[in-house]
Image 1: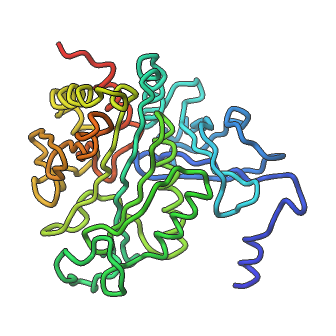
Image 2 (image 1 turned 90 degrees about the horizontal axis):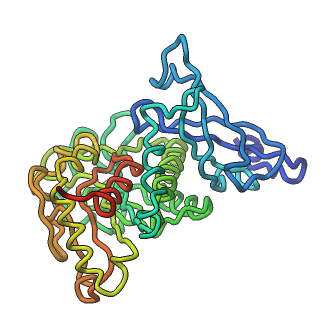
Length: 357
């Protein structure tokens, strides 16, 4: 094993200018992450300088077997925390050979919204709180839970320390540092209310980059849990009953909201979100109805509400924003398995571009 570790950690820059680029894309379920690697002649920092590539879409549920080629378009580059050196991770989106985005390419539509002059002028900032659950590999039961049984009730686990309360911290810390190394704007981590459940935050990040960064942060977490022999779950309600679900609370502000008088802009944006509540819920993740019950720090999925410092509302405004008269708000409805390209662009479209009739 020591020899294997030495080989994995070889510093290629001592011997060659060539680098390894890991191309990452989203598979047919809309949630599964796929990747494969290729050798490039030298370091690259601009995604437009990277070659397009292809893969077998019939093996990912994205193309028929008789016409299976899907084209990868590089969109964002990150440092590779696994291979290190000049090696890179490349976030891609997917197209047909004719250049049309395939149905699971949600980035394409999001990029059109974020490139709209009105949206671009507002410089939308996002901070996404990604909750997730670590599962024991062979039994698919939360890490730290007795197999087939339950720990003590919720209460002592949130932001906890101790072998009887905090499970998986080594994985979480490894992910935190790996994201910082990669160049992701990860802003923090914490243990969540349900034991075995954690959260990391990405942001503030502007526009389409928030989706790129969250997807790559998810990819890095998948790789680290793979090494640790633990399963990552983004299910919004992994354990039924009196246990918290998992969300992806999305904090949002525009230039107007961050400026003097911004609280009035925020209230108008929230009113727009209320009018399109059903449309947003339909785009906020699969299985979210199991999480948004009106209990466990959620609002009921069928109604819209907002309030200051209210974690039981659909949208929460912070005390500081109320006090300053400007700032940001938190959309608490998105599920942990939401697509950040879809959620961020829909929030921007509704609050900036959409005109109620």
